Length: 99
Image (cartoon, rainbow, N blue to C red; front, top):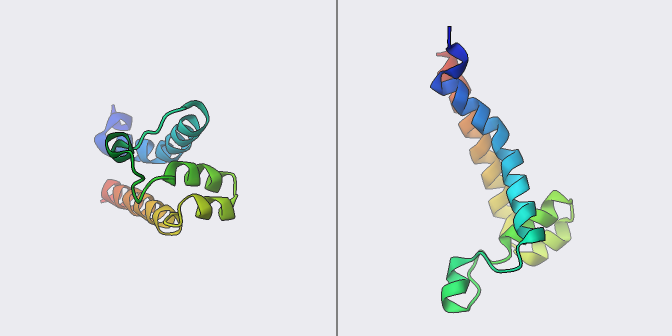
């Protein structure tokens, strides 16, 4: 009767919505936040290896690949890795639901 509210269905719905929330969060942080969100930089005053990653994702969303690489070259590793983790988790949840 309440099959739609089963834990697996909720997990799948959250996983499907997650990229949209990620996009909105990145765009909000880049366009409306005037201060750094990097804990390491706030404490030490120095850039960490991840500094520029939020802006790099924003540039990537706008298909400005060269700019994204300039902001943080690690984007070529992090972005595909996040996509892989998201797809693998979604596939695992769907398989779990069908078993």
